[in-house]
Length: 259
Image (cartoon, rainbow, N blue to C red; front, side):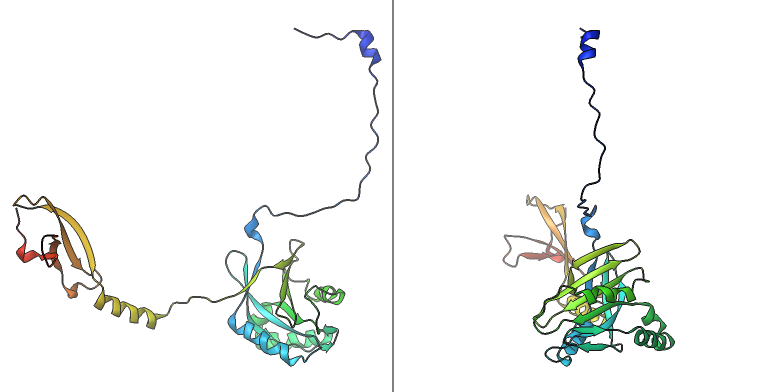
């Protein structure tokens, strides 16, 4: 059934003109589409030990800074794998790399170790006295020295065991604050260790393979047992079956009754 509206009713409907839209105070936020895509900072044991040695050298109040080479691992992991100390000006409230000092330092590094110079993508520094690890205005300005890179990592440390890392993704214009970090302990191939354990396994461990075969004497299905090691055929093979009625449990092939 159709509903009809009379012409008089249409005339009564008021047309309200909308107000023009005005931009409000925006509260723009970014969120991850894939939660596993944030960067993770990995610190090699050598670099971690270097940091623990550098911090006491700054005394009780001064700041101090250092650089690290970065190696990209799988799954957005970034490894700090060597530590370097460029010229700088430090005090109770500053740790500053000068443009002239960095230029001279990197010129020498390029001539002597080009690979390291290309991977120098981390700046770490110690905050003074009892300060926390939040970046200061000077810390933010310092990052202008590094924005020609695709990315750069900043680490801020204090004297109370806290470290905070920020990942600057200049290529995508994204900044990641307080990203996770951990000590990196890789498990590398150790041929001597492999050989040691292979030898011990071959001597002490034998492989058991179960099969079933029917025997005379109404004894039904008995599992035939093949004890061997496929990796080393010279160790020999023992064939038999396990019998719960036999005190020895295992009946060798020589004593088996075949159909």
